[in-house]
Length: 107
Length: 115
Image (cartoon, rainbow over all chains, first blue to last red; front, side):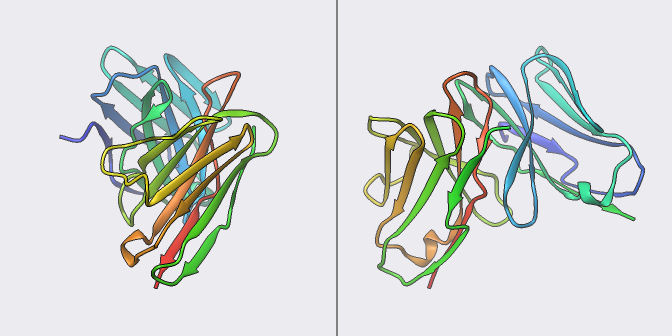
């Protein structure tokens, strides 16, 4: 069993839809990152959270430490949100990466 | 947010040659940098942890003599792929942690193709 499981693996949405990507993990963590990887490969860190909920623009990330589960939500999705979203829990900054969720938002 | 610059963004080299990849923190001091590798349709995998002024810590299965890491200053770490082979073709990416917090800052990545 993988240490980090993301679902769904692939997600296609219409512009404007509300998106949820889930992440379950079995590793011990001090913080969990949500990352965005565009087709060219570059990675951007969206959130780092260790409890509760964070919001940045149309993006919301939540984490439940007891249940070892985190979710990333995108409100009013847009084609420019199309990318791979990666969940990465970590301890002492050593991250374990999920395989990612490929999101495609169609206009 | 802070900026990590990785260079080159892509490189093609011949089998048997060596390739150096640079990772620079542009506006903060990075006591620790991390090097990852990503094969197509696979997760990022940590190769090694680089601490300024000391030897890198390699993950199990990563050959330290093949993947030379140097972190000579608080703003620069380099990864040298020595005697490259086609199976070393991959996407290599670095990240840096500053001295103030544990936020992750990633470089743009380097796509290495060995022919």
